[in-house]
Length: 311
Image: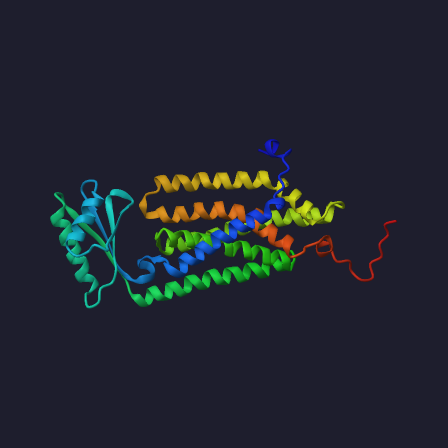
């Protein structure tokens, strides 16, 4: 990989205006969808009843959904859990109906629908108040992480780099959430965990690029800021490609083979890795360049009283 990329000199920053238009378009579409359509929150956030049942043979999910819909549970979310014989059912809360009554009715429906034996393995209930608390805590977790990152990057590098990294992270999170909103995919705690993981992955990729940019600003004497950032991006390209591809291979395997229970989780991570890799090259670096970073901003501060003995 190093051999393949060592002689490449892509003009990344020369295409930054096109990338900016592309990013702004995606962010606007995402925000519009989030405002107009919102997120389809799972039972973790809305509250409701979770029922796990086991079959003696592989379960026919379409038949299970049809039986529940015919008996007044059309909104029930049915998915396999672990093996084809394990089924997880999520029900939204109903006013005036206890969780135990819902689970008994659902179990009765499934027992009549299935020719084999059906085993009720567990029933869990999440109250609306708990769901509201999880929603607030999840949003707070994302906000706190962004603030902490801003402070960390500002101390380690320079305030322009901190602003650029946060812009890239907001860009990544907004597009990921917008994707789930646009296609009305369920957003639960596992997807929230994926979003937080995306923040960490994107930041790590951005820090690697920023390290090389800072190093080259201090080492390369000729060239303006755009040329130095381009050089830095090309030098880290091999590492970026290898890291992203190996991560995507694992995530795609999880998406295909991991089962429906982690489908949205792996999909959020795949989207986040792709968008995060793109943003570390175009969004974060372009933002730093637009903010006017220069060699003087990154040169080590000379202590007072130290005499330079160099001729």
